[in-house]
Image 1: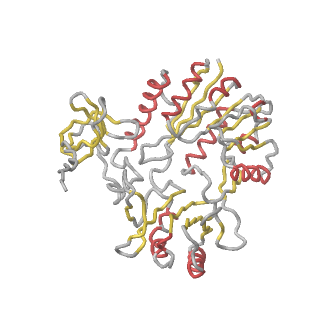
Image 2: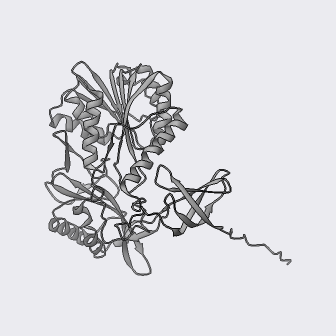
Image 3: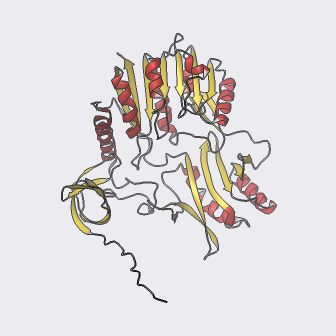
Amino acid sequence: MAQFFKPQPKTPTRITLEVQVDSLDLHGVGVGRHQGKALFIDGAMPGERVKVRLEDDKKKQHAQAQLISVLTPSAQRQEPFCPHYAECGGCSTQHLPAEMQLTCKVSGVQQLFRRLAEAEIGEPQACITGPAQGYRRVCRLAIKYDKKARLARFGFRRRQSHELVEIAACPVLEPALSALITPLRALCNRLKSFRDLGHIELCAAEGSTVLLLRHNGHPPEGDLALLRDFAQQHALQAYLQTDGAPQPLTNAQEPPCYVIDGQQIDFLPGDFLQVNRTINEQMVATVLEWLAPTSDDKVLDLFCGLGNFTLPLGRRAGEVVGIEGVLEMVQRARKNAAANGVARARFFQCNLDEPFHDMPWAREPFSLVLLDPARPGAAAVMPHLIRLAPKRLVYVSCNPVTAARDCKLLFSAGYQLVRWSLFDMFPQTGHVETILLFQRA
């Protein structure tokens, strides 16, 4: 039989360069240039000369480069406060001074609106900040079974990777959560079913700490006993999730809650919560001030979740209608409204990415609108809001790219941007939260 030589694919040669870093993008990533092409270099700072390796050079105008070493460091470079910073994917800007982190976020939002919305939005009314460490009240810890070592690895995902970085503590978590990491690792490796562990979610609730263990099988009774003992020892509200909704591991357990605007909002593990309680309180206060609802106003709150904004609005407006895509959260929002005596709040389940114009609430008039979409934005909602023509509209955004895209339609419809503010919900990262107030011309 004739045999033919089949050449093996060549491993691409990665080019190493020395680059001068000129600026930062929205996410705090250093930007330099090589042969007229912009290079994005994570971990580099303006004014630095760095050695990099090209990682993705397929685009004509820009490329990704991996930082190898800093040849000439900036005098402003900060020593990261976390020993896992070089590997962990949680934080990306600990090497930048706090003021520089805010500056690049502000300029990044302005540039995105200039490019995507064709609008000059000016300076923010305020840049709202909170603690730089110990601010996260929610986290997800990854668990990976190591076949070779026959144990469960425990920590966060590596940067731009599915690999796991084992950690002993996390300084950006609220201290009560960080203190659980080491004992949780020991607990997981005592469980007989440790090969079937999914991940662990932790949340600092009002007066308690909540633990949710996601499990890919059905833990034996011995494991359940260990989990209950651990929960009792550490005063946790513990939940287990296998193939259904989270189930409490202890009897007569009240649902966890948090307090906003003097109202108690009950939730269950897995529900969406704003991760930074300090910034969330200031965001709610800003929304109330900017929308300024009175008893004559009827407010539409889109992507309302558990009622984080809806319930405070419901105490001031004539009526508020909250719309949320997750039915279970809608049901809990209704219970929260009843428990807090907010009789003027109604809630409906609706997927706002699909046609909703035949829904009864969509045919109602509203004088004020609040929307707080997830990162994909609210493209399907914007045409309806323009037809609705509220007198004031507040857009709460966790992604300025989609916010700029969506708000372009508001500008085109004659709405004016009255003011905007930046909220540093996620210090030490490139993520940013903004609130924008629009008024009908």
